[in-house]
Length: 310
Image 1 (spheres, helix red, strand yellow):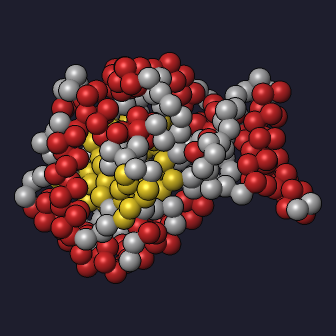
Image 2 (cartoon, one colour):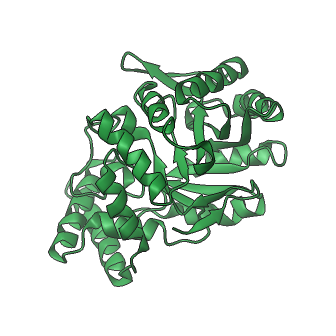
Image 3 (spheres, helix red, strand yellow):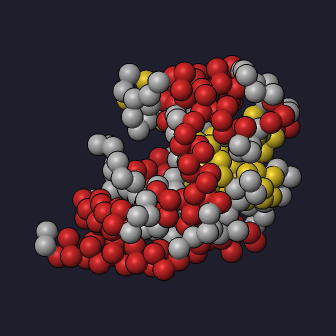
């Protein structure tokens, strides 16, 4: 396993990290005992970074992860969770107030069974008033940092422009890390356009969802996936092509997402120990760059054809 510095935090994260969204049943149903075993396998194989959120499975992911972490020494992993986005009874809720943010951290620590959080994110700021994030949410988290309850503060979002705006309008050094998803994978590498900005501001970068939330898999996307049908169909064609080449699209997707040394860690989610082993073996194997170009061309060409015919 390779390890990289996360900005100026002093944390050295494994190049591949474990996302715990699957422990909340976000993508598919799962067996809890197997999910707990998968967390143990990740640590055993050198993964030292785990990310979760109270939003995943409406608190379930933190609860299940907490059970897994009770079996693992605290010095074996860095842990991040989030504030701002929640849900219950199948309904999304958002609350970026200072009071709720601080309360949320306390609740997460209790569910996770830990006494501090290494990295706390403001979750999916595209759903927030960005001025509130800057003026209220982040200062509340910095206050917890001063009290020693959290070590570092960051933001997550799909929209890279939002991350840039909040960094530009926050006090220097407030945001120490960002997490962006689905923007450094085979079908979309837009995150690369923002790396100079993040580095200039001393912000570490974490990439999430190398499989584009199921787009770049044989299994395909869950029903709730937001991708337009032309993209879904294009990625299906790409998966079929990779199968013909005897090169699983999941392997190529993982290899591509971990290939940029300027990105500290790329996280993927699973509830199966065998998937931990498989994906780490993918990450450590040499990438077929010619196939990368062919797949990216297939995705682009197929999208254009599908859009034209709709």
